[in-house]
Image (cartoon, rainbow, N blue to C red; front, side, top):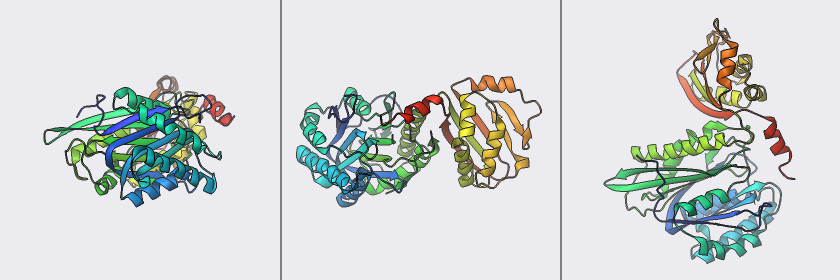
Length: 401
């Protein structure tokens, strides 16, 4: 398996300026398959959903899991815009279908940006001819797509992998955006948007079987601020251009897909709004995997814990408190906690040789690990999260102005 920049065959990419972002930067990105691609997607579990999520779900059902065009605008979420938002989304998909010669149901829309502002669909429609002219299949075209979908992100996020299938190279490429409003909870059916491309020959049914496990171990294991966006989307497309057939039970392809998803998820965490620390939570010994996840989320969503991390304060009592209210089955007398290599909590109390200064030194690093042994079972999970800083507050206090 390799991870060099090697784009899947059968796709072209472009990004143009449609005057949606106040900055004037490129804000309309499209990916176009040379011929119709198999597709599967997962969307936010937020019960308030953006118009493109509603339309995207419908399109996949109507097309039978086939996509020719992915159309993404940044700077406007097209959420909480009522029927007007749905109509705006449909205007864009209809125009894109004409522009690229496909069925309207084969155009998949996405949006990211501010909520509650009507989407100026006419600007996107007017930009489509420029998109078609700009399309290309080089690494730079792919990076232009990655940069155009950014909002509060400070850098583009991409990941690549390739494997051999019966002597043929199969490639996977992923691109993501997201830096805040990140606690994805994706279910089959400032935002995290993820687009995954492969040139393997895979049916929509098999894609739908492959995607959930990769999402569960990556995007559903990260949190910046505990807020689940209205627009979260993960889309997986297979062009079939390599000619190599892959099924849902292909272990090496599944592993490569997992690798790409986890890389993108960790890049999102690393680029979190105002982030100065990235923390890996390793929860072991829970009554079940679900309980391990409950503990991880309770810790990751605690403002007290996250601000302690921001200040490099090894206040393990805040961890104990979060474990206690997580809803997981616990025995306080069995809880052990390590910060990096140092044990800071033993049997539910302060570790005998706890060295506060040494613990503080560990927390001065940008990345560190907290391992928690609950001692009540074999459940476990890994989870990635961040601190909470004054810069995060500043960014989000001024987001709409």
